[in-house]
Image 1 (cartoon, helix red, strand yellow):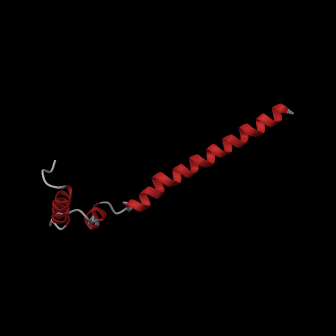
Image 2 (cartoon, rainbow, N blue to C red):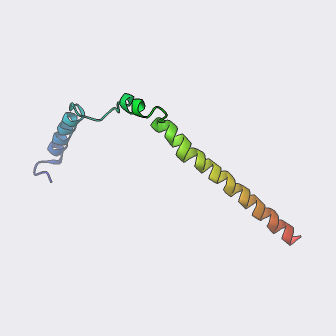
Length: 80
């Protein structure tokens, strides 16, 4: 907790944040050449998300919709 005014605390926090961001060991950007050299088939973060998160979710959604349609058709058929 800061013993100074909130404005002063914010100023101190922003200054320390600026020092962290420009630090020589800051991880703002990921250097991927070494990883790609070790694992040539590795996907980028974006490609990995698409392949392993979004595509399976879309397939699950399609399967769910198909199951719901089938249940509705069966319900209609049993009512007739």
